[in-house]
Amino acid sequence: MIRTSNDNPFERRLLNRVDSTLSLHYQAISSTDALKDPYDGNFSLPRYFTLFAEIEQVDSVQRSQMQLLERENERLHGLFQAVNLKIELLTGAIYDGLAKLLSPIPQQVNVSESGLSFHAAEAITPGTHLHLAISHLEHHYHIAATARVVYCEDEDLEGFRTGVYFININPSDRARLAQDIARKQQEQEVLKPFVNPEE
Image 1 (cartoon, rainbow, N blue to C red):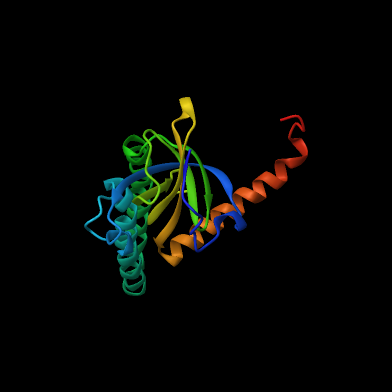
Image 2 (cartoon, rainbow, N blue to C red):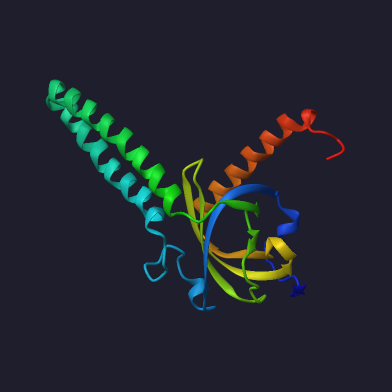
């Protein structure tokens, strides 16, 4: 087992943590790059990762144009609204398929607002800086962050349990993680009476 001293400014152990099934893409980066915006163009983000954000931008422009059209021509607005609905349904189906096809195989990840732990195929030296692309395909969110490896433990057949804390994560992404953690905890509370006490 390789561990470093606990220098996590967020003290992850004190925050709410849950196990979640996430797709995780990571790459080693320099300590200087770890301070950059996680969505910086120099980082290699998977194509499916940015596709949803790009579609959202187009939708935003389209919605404002549709509001203008509604005031000017109601019949034309109704026609375009029907066409847009069809396009949205097709886009959603294509996006879901692409994301599942192109994303890494989802794995059990222990996640908090300040970091996460996951199984890596190879040992990653504590102190290494990583760029992370985190996806929850079921709940349609993608988060980019930079992080620092705190520990790496050999777990035989499962690979190396690797713990990281976030160095740079957008506040909106941290809030999204917090929301997902709260949702998962609520689900666990609902299921608690039905869990076998021997497990």
